[in-house]
Amino acid sequence: MKAGALLLQHDAPSRLVDRAQLVEAAGYEHLWLADERFFREVYASLTLCALHTRRVTLGPCVTDPYSRHPALTAMAVATLDEISGGRAALGLGAGISGFAQLGIVRRRPARAMAEAIEVIRRLLRGETVHLRGKVVHFEGGRLDFAPARPELPIYVASNGPLGQKAAGISADGAIMEGCGTADEARALRARIEAAAGAAGRSPVDVELVARLDACIDDDGGAARDVLRPQVAKKLGGGHLKFATLAAQGLDLPAAAKALLTTVRYGVGVSPFLALLPHVTDAMVDAITLAGTVEEAAEHVARLGRAGIGQVLIHPFAPPGGTIDDTIMRFGREVLPRARKLLAIE
Image (cartoon, rainbow, N blue to C red):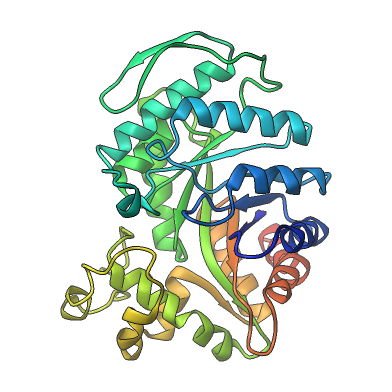
């Protein structure tokens, strides 16, 4: 089981460096930074982190093929790979952040990701690329330099079946937000296995990543309360798809969700606070990682048994603590316990 940390570039660059070094010191394998509008620029931030770390893999989680042309993404991630000494990875998704402000229309997202991967992989291999796709167009361009690693790893983030199919066909990893139950992990694994098999690939070549908001505290109930508004937003906003939650009785009432499906992405949790009475502890546990060290370790182990290879946390501060506390406790306490549970079975 690998550990990843997703950081959002809210803080000054010097604070980001401190946190990146903390992630590395706590034993994480991956450090991911959000490519959100309008946070601090992701590749400048990743470069800064690369220059102040030595071991951890770095990449955007996630960039998209609409706001940034895939050829420019290939150029940026290959440059990051050079700067970091071969430690870059690319997280690619369909995007939504800032699209309304930028006037971007997200057309055929699964197709756009598949075409973006084709352009990026071919450019990283040194090819001159001609592609007139359904979404992505690129006319006879190539990189001016030879990338250090032509087969740099690409992860696709998607909660939908078509995006997950694209991951199984051509990605090195599949990231699913809120994939917090064993049933959901198994559903993700089944989709990846089917797509990879149809493409003549081995499913074991696609790492399954559960991207979870996380809060660790000695009071497990308090940790869940920290994340409850985030759960209200994720379930109430309608931006995420899940294959199994409704069947498990872990979704919000349809009437409650219908009141908020028109709320724009990026507005924060305030519009969703009215849903809090409907958000049970079971719902919190279904799409986040919250609780005591022991509870979180058991949770991670269940996901590992279901096929998850990396738990990617977006850390939240426990009551009276800081984000750094969650980063440290997950890396130093939760993960070793979870790995021990998995090893003895």
